Image (cartoon, rainbow, N blue to C red; front, side, top):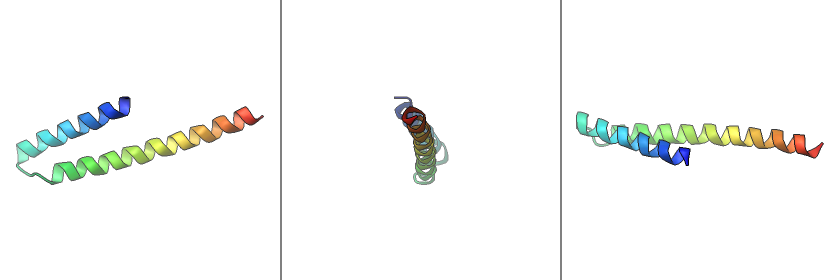
Length: 59
């Protein structure tokens, strides 16, 4: 849920930047890269936490 709100916020700011600068592509490319980076970080943290929890439960 929180991640979906983050996507909405990222796209809102990209849309505002697009309207302000008149550049239709660059703000959305930056938003896409930001989204990919955030997704990769969240996935890595999730895998790490899952591994720790599995080791703790397996004891």
